[in-house]
Length: 110
Image (cartoon, rainbow, N blue to C red; front, side, top):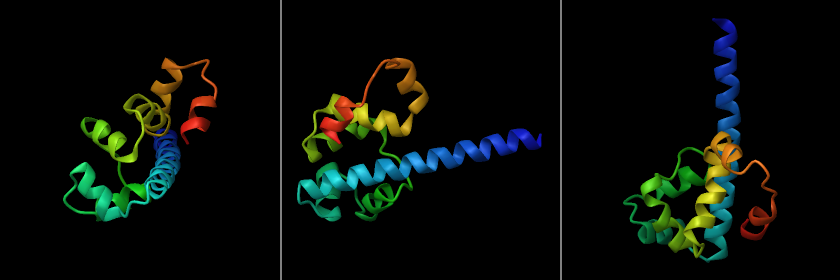
């Protein structure tokens, strides 16, 4: 039982690290477009701009049904946007779908 709890805690820590990386990437993309958090919130239809801040610090995830809105607001092709987010949000599925993938697309987008 203790080993299982430790394994879950470790997974949570890895997930948190990945979320923070996703947040930094989102912030970088927002700043490249010269958008404030409030402007981005308006573009993606988020009522409270503080949600953008939470995402950028790794305390949340973009809902999948909003990926296209976010991609458009940040000037990224939706497929490329999801590709990058999947690396951060769901690395196990990403590795299964793209086992041979290198970092070339991530470097080009990121």
